[in-house]
Image (cartoon, rainbow, N blue to C red):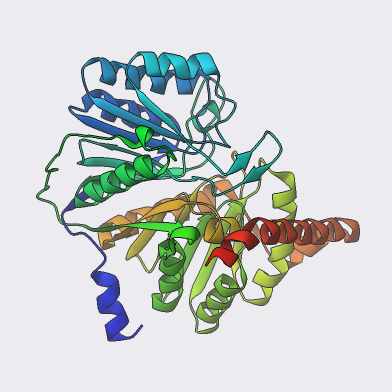
Length: 393
């Protein structure tokens, strides 16, 4: 990248932060509940899926405990993905002091949706402590009994980046309502903590309607900046034309690119469509690994042991052009090296390497036709879903 572009990129980071990577499952939900229980004044929790199950009940109980000790608690859920949440469950939250609101689409039903989806997932407490990633509030994302959580990640942060998260939480809460009466919002003004540690962190968002494409830009920056290697861990991996072009250019100049994808997926048609993309990756010397332990739901990337992004952003056009997404970027060598080592272990111990030879030898002609049909179908659906938003730009 040019010096001017590098300087502009560096200016978007906050500096006074303390961070750590958090694994999905028991570790994530223990931390989430602990943060809620430790909150003194203010909580913003915003997520895509919140289910009335054991995990959802545990988180709801923590929110109610906070509200009862006079913490202002604001819960914002996506109006489409969380629409199965029972009315008595919501009523209990409201009766016990939790401020509840839907991020409502323009038109929705059980089978139809028009409008943006609020796909991000984050918690921020007291404008000082943040937790953001790709993990929804549901038993699927938790370790319960013999059921292993889906593979996913989040970033815990203290300091300036958490204060940025709090600002986003406030703005999303206010803008989520169409009625003036419902927009009344008077949270406490909190200074936020400034940790002694220095770590460069920035909050990145994609919201095409609001002219924000920060996360897409972060990925493009990664492809242009990487000198040695890139690792992407991605669910629902169907990159668009611009993403593929930059990825191919990085590979062409000698950057070793490894992609960790779902060997087990919750969306079978997406899995078939991803496999159709393998042909393109083989042509561009991109290594493919399939995670076999459980469903892969994470969205994470790193390069050269320097930089990491983690959040809600899937590498496809829905995240790029339609949904509201939130990622956290960390520019810090020790942190990035630690994440890289964890990904190396996942690839070596829990994945199957997919080569050109074993892919074609184990994929009969009819299966290849199904993969292409799935890819074309999903690309068409993505086009229909994102066309309206592109026209708005």
